[in-house]
Length: 409
Image (cartoon, rainbow, N blue to C red):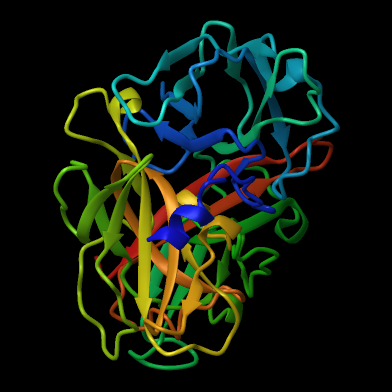
């Protein structure tokens, strides 16, 4: 235990998450969350026709007040800024407003201040569909050096999307892959050249780091396009995510082997996992995290716990192994990189996490999970399709369609 404690004296290391939907740049910021309509299971996608709200929250690891300023930026489908429009085109109200909601942690071993921001609000609301970046920086600091960046989408329902997911793929049948067939109907949208005006993005389990884009339809009809037998829409099936709960720091819950106190942290050692030889069904949440504890207001009463992940296997080829989930943005987060212990014959990682429910998987450097998790056609997966439109004369992309489909659910 001593080596883990020494390793995490500097637990507040900067997270490097390149090209990811959520990014933290400051070492004192943790647990960045985006929650739609108080439901942590929903993706950060807002229907422009509904009165939905998005809460962005994070913890600053002290009780010292920081005056944070938020800045909203509209983006193209590839998350580059929409330089062809003005703020007044995509925002009602004023940009660069202060974050006014904050609360100090109460009766916790690690002190922190919980900050939150709800959009839209009385000062700011969004007018256009599309991709949005929320940049948060400290008042008096450099706006070009934010402490965090949160990404979300606002979509219209201008096109109809038909998605069919199958385990009968062009590379195998009921084995290691899953395949999508897509159909997009324009409805009343004036599409002249779908190859230039439409841009389709497909996500598996809400991961942007390995998104499929640049798709070209192979069937064109009068008011629709179709993607059939498309090689980019063949996905490795993966496996069900592992999961655990840290609800009570005094006794272990699901997926936790033991909880111990080594000043100044609680330590939770998870049940050791092994690469599976066959598929075993286990209901999971595809990498989602839900902050919760025994107390009602977990936002400010939940503890931060050093959580020990263990993968029991001989050393594997294929590069470094990382603990990954939507709470790590599916990316190879340096904080979540696992070290191999020759004595125990296990890969191990220790990550400082706020109490709650977590689902996770083990991902290798190249993004593969075949050696650590396996690829089984029976796996339940979520596939999301986003359709962007930029017509002749338009200055930015609109997100005109969004749909999700599940397989094996």
